[in-house]
Amino acid sequence: MQHIVIDKPGGYDALKLCEAPDPKPGPEQVVIRVKACGLNYADGIIRMGLYASAKKLHGYPITPGFEVAGVIDQIGGNITRWKTGDEVIGLTLFNGYSSHLVLDQDGVFSKPANLDFAQAASLPTVFLTAWWMVHRQVYPQSNETWLVHSAAGGVGSALLQLAKLAGVKAIGVVGASHKIEHALAMGAAAVIDKSSQDLWAEAKRLAPDGFQAIFDANGVSTLRQSYDHLAPTGRLVIYGFASMLPKDGKLNWLKLARDWLKTPRFSPLDMTQANKSVLAANLSFLQAHAPTMQDGMHWLLERFADGRLTPLPVETYPLAHAAEAQRRIESGQTIGKLALLPD
Image 1: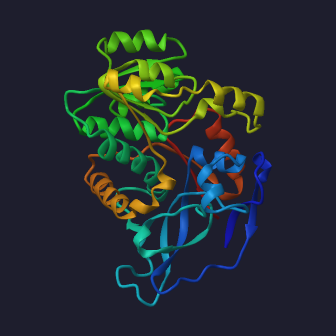
Image 2 (image 1 turned 90 degrees about the vertical axis):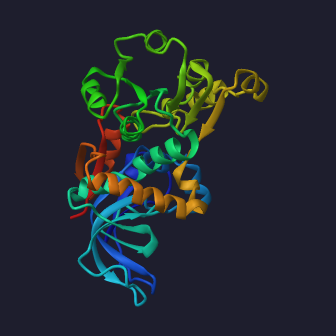
Image 3 (image 1 turned 120 degrees about the vertical axis):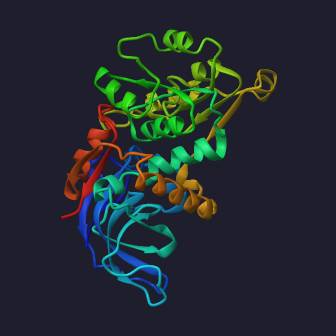
């Protein structure tokens, strides 16, 4: 098998293509011959050495990657649910950048026939993150108005679709004009292009009484204003800190420290008086909720199969070009998702 290995944190050259023996399944496991590996912004943070769960739950060397799609190649002796040749989606805590992956059977799901492998591999992380925030933290009501930052990215696109399904009016925020059409196609009721519009003036115009929920993965650049633009009983949901990180793969520790010091610290007294809440989500630290996440996957896949949810556009790269793909996603210019294709 081939897989990408990061021996120690660093730049794009830290991603090494390595050979290893093909894995063998345990009694309750399967081996997936991987056709596509989903690529997420978090994978680059793992490469930089800043992803908390990579350090606390795994350590280095590490193979990044949380999601794959492929064909079952081998099954363990106690497996009755799957057979070789089944087309599946696999969820994994790291190790996804691989041509072969061994997984417990509970982390494997049937691939909807209407999705190709790249589409299937790129949906679990972003849609499960969005599903968790929407249906386990925010609990949407059809008369609400939400603001979705990074609306053309993976999680942002998923949030827009889930908002539309719930009857919520979602306003998308994008950073470039070429992303507007995609955000509208994902279900945004309106789109703010912050490269040519005043973000918060437009937000105030579109929701003069504030937003019932705001989803923010930017970090210090928008968190304070996001909180300030919540309506009473509004919820700010934080799931990333992208504005603190570089777009060229090179960490600037002085900027990182400065942004950390500038990151808002929300006062419980103020939240109590304003009836505003701050929530947060990180899928890789939700392993204790695996049964709930399995329910979420089944909920999502049912809606992908019948067309209520639609797959995101996917840029694909050979597995050996993982560095190029990570450079691309960190540029901030992508729409939808990226996937790696093993040879």
